[in-house]
Structure formats: structure tokens, C-alpha cells
Length: 153
Image: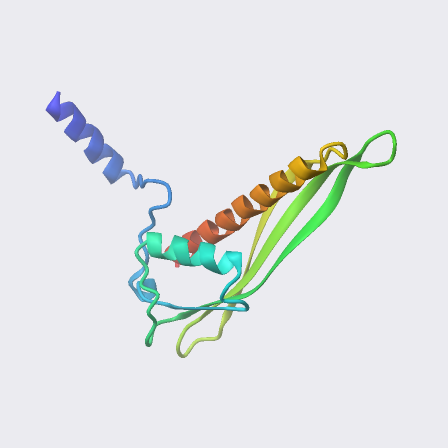
């Protein structure tokens, strides 16, 4: 039985399996400076959390700089009720960011997260809360994608 467990762990480790949220950062990104258009923005907090969870040291020095340039939430109509009111939206969260490394040109990157959102005009308060939770989830996903892109180099 022990050999079976050991063999399974060996196979999972050998195929490149990693737990979700666990990324091996290149040595050049083990220590970074994180700057943002707004140090108190929700996306800044989400990126900070994702980077530290991946073992990145945010006390900069001479390391590369990760600069969060801007974030934006857009809403596009997908469908209408027969009355003409909007029934469904597509929420599009966009994060623009840069990697600034010494002696290299800055790399501009964009992350886009999309979600469908069904609206119900009779339940305004509940739908507003649902939309807030959805946008928070989208920010977290954008932060996780940023970390994955860094891990890929």
C-alpha cells in the first residue's frame, strides 16, 4: 500500500502536476517591486496576496518592477426582456500592467476576464450584491493570471 502511494506521488510530481495557486517563479521574479495606479485599490490587494502566496518577496531592491497601470470594468448587453429591459450582461474586467526590468524595455500586458451576469429588475439589492461578488472574483482571477504569466517568464 505504501509503495502504491509513493508511486502515485512520484508520477504526479514527474508529470509537472502542481496544486492550483502554486507556481514556481523564475529566479528573476523571486523578489519584485509592486507599484500601482492606486496602492489601496482592490486589485492591488489581490495581486499582493497572489504574489506572496506564490513565494514572491515584495520588498523590492534591485529586482524587476511589476506596475499595475489601470483596471476597468465594462458591461455589454447580451439579451433583453420582451419589455426592453436588459436581461443579461457580459461583464468584462480588464487589467493593464507592465513588467519593468533593468536594461530592458517595459513589457505592456493586458489581462481580460469575462463573465455573464443575469439581471432581474425586481431584485435590485440582491443583484447588486451578486455583481459585487462576481467582480471581486474576477479581480482575484486577474491577479492569479498575472502570477501565472510571471511564472511562465
